[in-house]
Amino acid sequence: MSFDVPPSSSKRMTLKSNIEILGSLLKNNTGPSSKSLTSDEIAALEQLHSSILSSFSDENSTSSKSLMSKKGMKSMKSITKSMKENEEDEDLTIAYKDVLLCNGITAVGIQNVVQFRTGHSSNSIKTIPLRNTTRVSGHRLGKMIQSYNGNKASYGLRISELSQSDRGSELSLSVSSYIPPEWTKLTTTDVKTRLTKLLSWDNLANWQFSIVEVSRLTDHPLLFVGWVLFCEPIPFFMCESTTKDEEDKEQTPYRYRFAEYIDINPEQICNFLREIESRYNSDVPYHNNIHAADVTQTLHCIFQMMDQAELMRIYSPMTIFSLLLAATYHDVGHDGYNNTFHQNALTPFAIQYNDVSVLENMHSHIGNSLLFGEEKRDEWDLFGSWPRDAQMSARKVMISGILGTDMSGHFTHMEELNAVVEEVHRLQLKEFGTDEEQPILSILSANLDINESCDEQSQPPKLVEECKKLADLLLIFLLHSADVSNPAKRQDVTIYWAEKALFEFFLQGDREKEMGLPVSPLCDRTTVKKPDSQIGFSKFVIQPAFDLLAEIIPRVNEEVIPIIQSNLKYWKKEKSRHIVQ
View 1 (cartoon, rainbow, N blue to C red):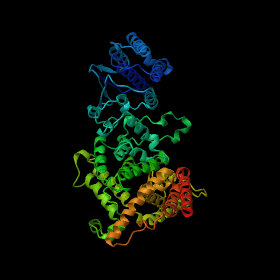
View 2: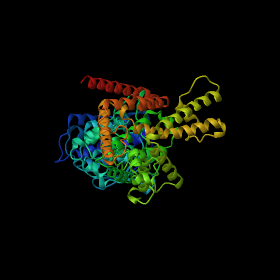
View 3: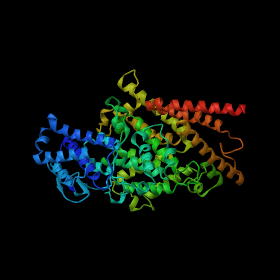
View 4: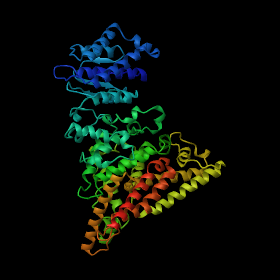
């Protein structure tokens, strides 16, 4: 069936969506090949049916009720009967069509295919294939109902979640419906279910998230994390936050909805992620695709910790998109040796980049070559449709972000960031004659509101200048913080990454000894002790860095600092235990 959806109110759209879901569920859960519905599924269907009926009885929906002809009401009764009895109804398709027709949706018969026109242009048609074998759990249906927001662009796409079959190639290349082949090829339904839960928006926005759990279920953690964050596919709309109470709304994960602001193609994004992931060396213990996925998710989580209204006034969707994309390839091609090794060994990389941020320049080169340079291909040309100035801005964000992950600049960057934070506070107090310091994000959003096109002449020029500098420095520091965040993660994750990092360092130390080179710090397996290495790194690098970040993003102080302190206690206890032994 094909339906043209005319412009209408969100209430009318919700009604149509509920009828659409109910009709499709019943159509695909009846017939000789179907199984009986579970009690959970029946309860969910009854809830949906009640929602439809309440829409007709709502005092504000009298116009919707008046559209229901006798034929339409008869169709509703047919649906009710089918729902309760779960019997095959040969006229269900007709009843489904009648109900939609009575509510302003034009239907033409194309068996087992639903097409929705979500706008006025021909490009806005979404095609969704339906299968008689389609099944959906009552829990997932409940999530679908709760998460529906009346957005026309996602209206027709709701139905795509009903299908559990491998049909990625049959879906249109819309942002919400593209499914990478790696997902459809997952071995079992259980794996898909577990990954769907792990990669929900709630989970990805949680500091307790573990990419290690994801990597145990799939060889493509970077592809899947990137797919969810950049493309926001339908299976992952069903996150726990949709059931939260209104008073917890500020804690609800914010979805970027990049497609509403910038021109993106999910298939191209997944092609790029696939190519990037393939260029990470799987035999490198630490700097591999799992680490890249971890840093990407961690950066996303830090963004989520910021006040979302302020975030979107300080940084454009293009900027956020670009930095998250940079995170995916910030260590691509890493060979397991650090910059010190490359400089001492006079490797081709060191010669090419003149001993300056050797690896970081190499990582940036690989990504930029794929996106803008000699290795650019149509299948992953993410920026091809962007205006040139937008491309150059995105490239600047990505390059500066990746170069900022060079640990050699850590303390200098912290000093500069801290100095600008203090200067912004000083100027704010001076210009507005107040004795009370304002939150730094509030100051930035007030002076850099990109959505309001603020008149800089009405703002203190020096304060605006310092706010711009701070916003740029903070952006770089966010990616760097995500890159070194392992000691700030939950204990099992911290231990996992500590072991992987030291394993890689020791392999480098062994190689340096073989080559007669100076052994780099933390790379001599005969002298380095795991607890000592983690205590030192946490005390002198991680704790001060996240303390500074907490001054800017208060939730860091609440959710991250206690974990760092807890991990420090753990490593000190481990050190004592080894001394006793």
